[in-house]
Length: 212
Image 1 (cartoon, rainbow, N blue to C red):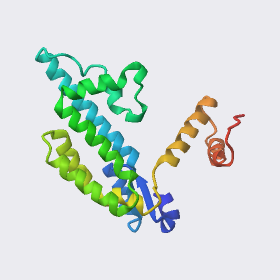
Image 2 (image 1 turned 90 degrees about the vertical axis):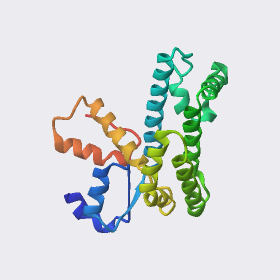
Image 3 (image 1 turned 60 degrees about the vertical axis):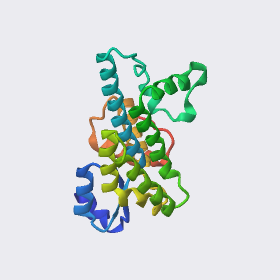
Image 4 (image 1 turned 30 degrees about the vertical axis):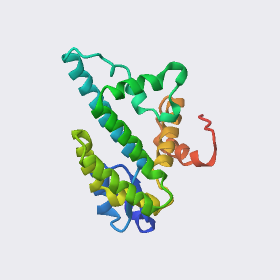
């Protein structure tokens, strides 16, 4: 908690995922800071729910001796539609699966609508899009969407705060974490902790790392 005490007075907003532990830590130590829920983590969480839904529906189809069209399309569901490879018939395979399974199709298209919230031109437009998404998800016949609508509604202010702080996200932090992991791997593990700290502090000063 020392870090909070040292820099807490200068923090206006904190980007984090929707994990209760992170939320509690921020509110307890820097209560005046605004929580901004990272949009990449929100989409990642939705994708995890979507994957589970596909798995459950596939199991139901196989138990009922239905055609296993849902098998092997997991990555197609998670892909950005613009990145689907027509040469590999990815769009055709996805369309076939969605046409034969209404709950999966509903969840898939709702994912794309959710992603579009962060592409709105301003906070008011995003607020309207978010509220409409929650309303549609709650009114759907898909339990996963009903549950996720509650999650989104409960974190509404932190989601919309994205537009108050110039698209603040955890992206830069995760990029730094990946650099640290690479640095540690290149050195096969540092035994001198203080030296490792110095290397980490120097990461922002260069695009490469020399380990010695």
